[in-house]
Image 1 (tube, rainbow, N blue to C red):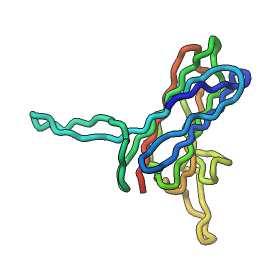
Image 2 (cartoon, one colour):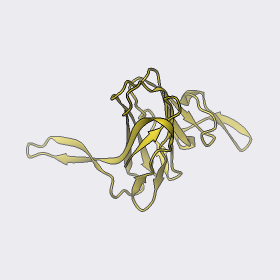
Image 3 (cartoon, rainbow, N blue to C red):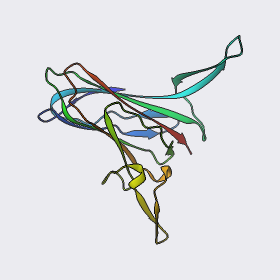
Image 4 (cartoon, helix red, strand yellow):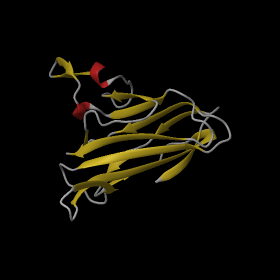
Length: 171
């Protein structure tokens, strides 16, 4: 699924909303005005096959059907389709309640990756987050994460593409 996002003064904030229905899918990114960023989210799962020589091969295939316990891989690509560099790009991806983030799987070249445990109100490194459970404060666990955020360090030049990826398990 892809969508062109318009951003104010090339300062772009994107939300890629992910939902779990009968099969996993993605909702388009939210829009703002002026400037252009084309965003595409795909949901895949890893398929293992054994070759004729007995080698195990891994490949990503569309996650048309998943069952509890399956891992899914979300890949968000974003392309600057304007004639100017885009600044302050932030990709924020909510996690559906039916998914648990797979620890250490978030990836995004040239980004700082942060997490939220409060519905996307505040973000920090995973190791800095805490939750209160039964009156006790404890370190946050991957199941506590409600959102993942990638903050780009540099401008995204005209025509350039960025990537954000993570793995989650269907509960």
